[in-house]
Length: 324
Image (spheres, rainbow, N blue to C red):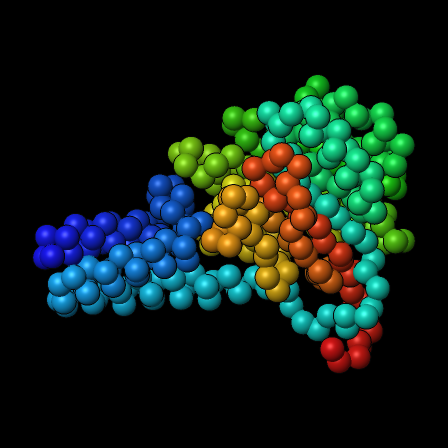
């Protein structure tokens, strides 16, 4: 039993070290584990508890405490960027609706047709798609409802990241923030419900490719700031970040752009186990925008991510809203 306790405890110890690395180092390797901080800490706590039950000793007990502390801190950090109050009461109508989905570039073209149907029927004012290739054969019928777009031939030679709007764009730009992939940052300034809003569709690579994830987010911040200087309006930012808001470079991106999350973020990956999943696809807002609602789409349409749909208030800061 003691040997089994040592084996189990060693696994727990290594997992705790990987999760705790963020507190002592900014190395990109620890960014990969940061997204799993809560789930990983829960697993480490279970393993350490098993090790303690098999052979009761102080080291195993301390590992249980360390794992619980790391998990609790991760949970607390989820609230660091929750949208500010006050916000309009629940009965106050939303100003616009946005859908975002990574449809997976090698998704079948049959699913591309289903996704096109869902886009057309969504009622969204703006739709942001990542890895848009399966939509290629369906662009003409999507255009009948969303005639204004970036990507898939509009300012690009690629059909990767795309942004679709029911109303004209005051300005629209396709940018490259990544050393690996082109045209994965789309910036658009759009009038929605009579108010001007800047939209950013962001798709970053996975955080375990050296420090490229951090480079992409830093470059995105610079390009968004430049765009906003020429198109003053609050930002609505969405896309696939391949990382949770527990990851240090995502947190830096949110801080530098003064972005907020909804009161809670739905898990978007892995789709096979949503109960233990995490939010690696995001929607963020900047003042004076507020979330009325944020939900995962009920179907994946063959993707390996759940998409997101949000209803947004454009808060009038001169109005005192009734209490919720």
